[in-house]
Image (tube, rainbow, N blue to C red):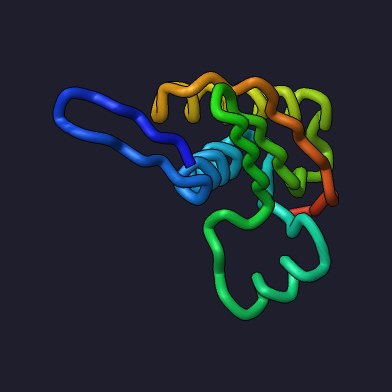
Length: 118
């Protein structure tokens, strides 16, 4: 959890808030079909309860943020370009929204999906 102090009081930013921003930024990136579960247990939990932070893992060491994303990419797109785009988009959005530097954005491609067969 990040604490920001100002003259009016303190602001606390949770890992869940950062995860939600990263999730939304990744979903809006070109070539991303969705986010995948980090592990089997998260996949089972996602089937029961829809979680807006699924596929995102945030680590905060007190100075910078490290984000791991587990994405599903559209078949036929250039995987390297999609991963770079997602990484840049997430880094920009999190830093702009929260004001904390993002040290790393690791993008893990979990699957390819064919969306439209027409």
